[in-house]
Image 1 (tube, rainbow, N blue to C red):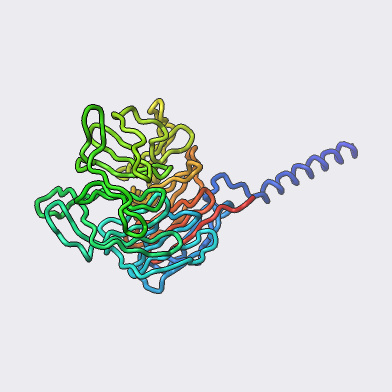
Image 2 (tube, rainbow, N blue to C red; image 1 turned 120 degrees about the horizontal axis):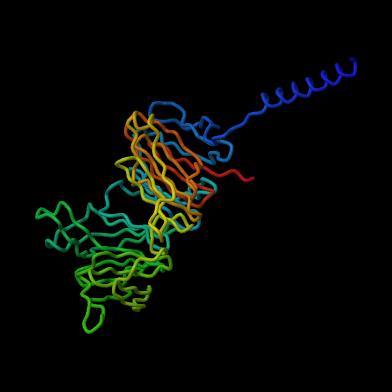
Amino acid sequence: MGCRMKKGIIKLGLLSLIIFCTMGATVVKNPLDVTRKLSVKNDQGSNIILKNATEYDMKWSFTSKGRYQLYNLYKGPNELVYAQSFEEIFAINAATGKVIWRHSSKWQSELAPLLGADGTYYKVSYDDVKHLSSTVYQTDIARFDSSGEVTTFHDIKLRIVTYFEDGSLFELFQAGDGQGNYIALTDEGLQSIKKDGSTNWLLTTIPFKDGVLDVNDIKMLSTDSKGNIIIDFAEAEAILDPSGNILRVVDYYPVSYSDMGYKDEHGGYYILDDNVGTIKDMDFKTRKLKWSYSLNKYEKAAGLSLFTGSFTTDNKGNVYFGANSGNVYSLDYNGKPRFTLSVSSRSISYPDIIAVNDNLTVISVNNNIICLQKKSK
């Protein structure tokens, strides 16, 4: 009898220990449940919340003294991030938060800002525009290279395409190659301009089959990952190297996975539908849905909607997107949440997101610039 009682006591003690340990342990099923109040505040003076504080932290932040200040961000080379404020443009080392250089530069004083393949930033001046004709605008172009050196190309005559008689909606064609040359469709043709403002090369036509392609018929101008120039026409695509040599001219052919933007790097590509607040990962070969993510019913009821202008990916296929409240979301290529930056602005606030790499994310929202980092294991 005494022996049985001892065994019963021992079993009861073990059971109590198990229950105690289970109750004492914190089991987190959703990593976003671990949150942290950041020192940075939203437009109501409330602390911005970082969700998944177990794996992520704020590396550095910058808050302007001007309450209504805003920043546009651009991704430069070697972990540089360019920030355009109302008054200036400056370059930040994302790894340290240190400002490398800054220059006076008015907000929205440009027709179309451009980031070249080598990381050079170009501003086509709006203030200096002269309408020489319905198809040619003369203006200055400021060139900011990654070292902070500034060069201005004066009186460049850009050929434009207008979509209304009053010229209120128009398009110009420009790109920056991998060698720091500015490529634009001008009144003379397709022109490559060197750093010092001299002409690198000039083309008016491109040979194609039994005839030629007129550069004035360009539909799109861009660069590839190697810094070559891609010229799209209605019936063909031409690729030139930075020296102006024609690498190939081909009829359009089926798009390959490497041509896709916003890839998950695992055979899929992302589509963001801001009308319904959903992001989808589609299989490139089958065009079937791999997974989707939507704002929850509480977020939708609060009037939140996703913003395509904040949509980006990194080198590992992680995806980032923002909402009109300033919130920022990141998912991995399987659709698993990585982090959420809960800004919850009262006024409509669209964040700007730069995925420097899969470890560093720089975000501008309201008058703040915030860098989040993935903690090292």
